[in-house]
Amino acid sequence: MEDVSDPPFRAVCRMLGADLTYTEFISSEGLIKGTASSRRKLDIYASERPVGIQLYGGNEDHLARAAAIAEATQPDLLDINFGCPVKGVVGRGAGSAVLRDPDRMVRLTSACVRSTDLPVTVKTRLGWDDDNKNIETIAERLQDTGIQALTIHGRTRCQLYKGKADWTLIGRVKDNPRIKIPIFGNGDIDSPEKAADYKDRFGIDGIMIGRAAIGYPWIFRETRHYLNTGERLPPPTARERVEVCLRHLDGALDWNGPLQGLMEMRGRYSAYLKGLPGIRDYLGQLVRLPDPEAVRDLLHQIAVVYEDYITEAEPIRLVDYHANCTL
Image (cartoon, rainbow, N blue to C red; front, side, top):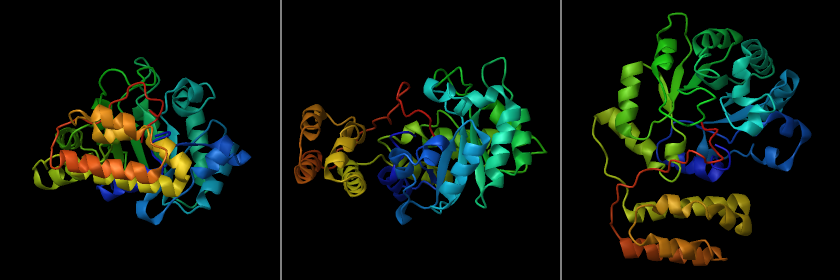
């Protein structure tokens, strides 16, 4: 998730029960050129492992070279993003643009697999549009390239993030007797109950959660508990929300430095504290404070004011959020 799935956020998700996280997707061309923003996305810390580096690109040679560069940072696996639907990525022949040319998708994937000793996985969609839902054929062909797992988002590229994700074809891919690799489902999972229902109904090997974790990483802990026990954990108290927000803040300051760390966190407070009555005034103060200690002090004050207040606030759903190339 662009501008979301950075090391501080991934560490929080791992702490709260995510089995595996992925980096923000990284341009293969950016890695080859050595741009600072692309290279910085390769940062991985012990607290977030296992973690995969997600790459995208539309050129075979560039994707292979980028995979070799990424491998040097010792991730646990590499993932190829063939699912991002945003215009800027599709216009460069990458992301879900490749769904219109399965032969090129196979060539790109094969080039990446050949260039690394790491496990390679793929994330993609059902197809380009409703008339071209070709994921069943694509899944077989991608498996033949040597990938180790496939994640399918239950929408076409033309749907973007609108409408309801259709998991029917994801289930059909999983039911294909020729498919031997793990199949993971993605799209619209925003509660433990839905995760359990979809896992049972469609028989997939695992579930990827992206947007629903923005501001509510507890979804991983709650889902894990529900799958194991059939019981729903209570939502986090206001104090728990603040404690995780503080942990995220500390990680952002360590990774970005004081100034950039505070700037980066300004978009996070409202997600963590959503649903608390009268929180808007506090949020206005948090985004204006120029000093990390002042921010920490105010967050501690919020924890005291709300104490054990519990809210059923829903996780953030940002249909038009620019980071929507999700895990």
